[in-house]
Length: 70
Image 1 (cartoon, one colour):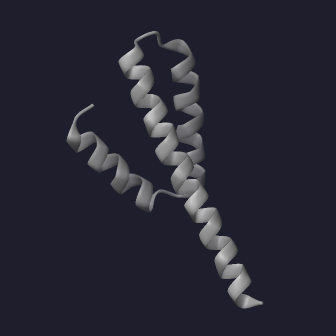
Image 2 (cartoon, rainbow, N blue to C red):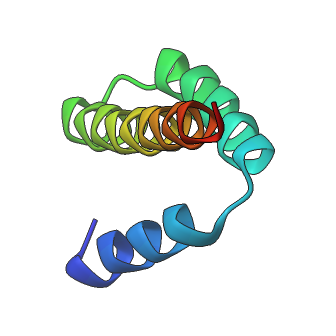
């Protein structure tokens, strides 16, 4: 996957709705199990890690905002 793909992915992760990220993550997990190419599996694992980081960052931000309201 080329540089433009990764830039596009990062841009999408910044604006995507959490439900959309979860849906794409499920699709990638299914695809990952069907593939045998190590390079492609590695790329999918990297995408999944980026998705997990984004979801975690959003959860932490939400928790921070809740704590500020108390």
